[in-house]
Image (spheres, rainbow, N blue to C red):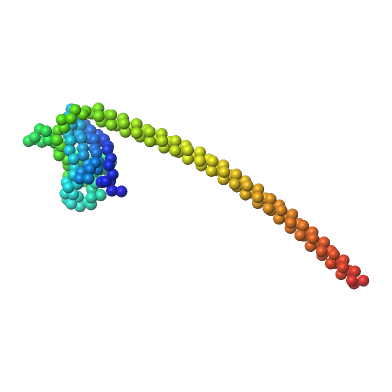
Amino acid sequence: MDCRVVPETFVTKFEVNQHILYAKIFWAKSESVLFDIQVFRDDHIWSGCFSFELAKTFEERLHENAVEYAKNVMDALKLKSNMYKYEFTLSESNACEAKFCWKRLFAESSAVLVHGFVTLQQDKSTETKDSIIDYLLNENKLLQNTIEGLKKNNEQLNNEVENFKSEFEKLIDIKESLESNLYGKFIQLLNTKKRRIKLLENHIAKIEGESNI
């Protein structure tokens, strides 16, 4: 599946230079942007976006196709891989600008390679970390509702399975009963045929005996 076109919002906690950062990421929110991001650091909020145009430059530099690169970026932002390190640096020339960067590590090597970065602007919004908590609580509520719905569906399916089992067992009993009755009737018919054949044989033998006298 091409994750570039599947909208998703998620929150990640980063530890960068002994600072805790919370990032709220809006994935595939628009047609021209791979993701938008809000970074909560101390009492400040920083916002930015990572465009498909910028992503393309990294795809070419890293020799990754668009789908592969997007998946790797998502894995990095969700902390699904330990092969990335993260940096948050304030601009020396502009106090309202910063950069969030993720770099790829290489096994058994001290080398690192910039995998992507977002230029951030300080957000004057009054939004706080509490909004992150509210968002997570709402997501948790939605997940709980989903779980409850799945539990009910599962219970209903289990009941249907039990009903099907019961009906199947009844059909097996009916089948076995029919087979038993048919077998009984077949034996009766066979015994009747045997008796008639025996009677005929005796009758023929009697006639042959009388004709020889």
